[in-house]
Amino acid sequence: MTGAFPFNLPLRGPRFTVERGSGTALEIRRHDDGETVGTIEVDMSGRTLHIESLCVEKPHRGYGAGSEAARLLGDAAASLHVTAWAPPDLGLAVYFWFRMGFHPVPGEGPNAGLLFERSPLTARTAPG
Image 1 (cartoon, helix red, strand yellow):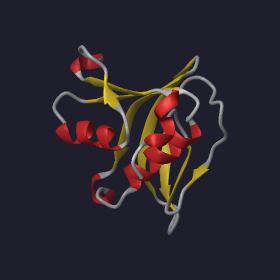
Image 2 (cartoon, rainbow, N blue to C red):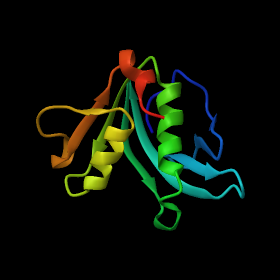
Image 3 (cartoon, rainbow, N blue to C red):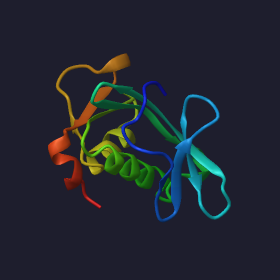
């Protein structure tokens, strides 16, 4: 994680919290037991928040941790331009960012992947 955020952490949702981790990543923690179930690598540059990766550990996938974490981060960054990256070989990531209200940026993204974006004007129109 680089750059300072124009919002405060932690971000608390109904079942999960996004908070600063011990390294450079943000951590996704489950409320029930405080276990870290995933990480988010982000970069703040000017008025753009770039989500380099959002990864939920395999045993914890399918329970809404990634969706809740993305919504919390998106709501906190509602006034910012937000981008996210999807690996070229992971169709589920493409579907995930579509569901979160992002749209693809034409052309090849970083590391031959797909770049998605959400403008500040559409920040609060993502499906719930």
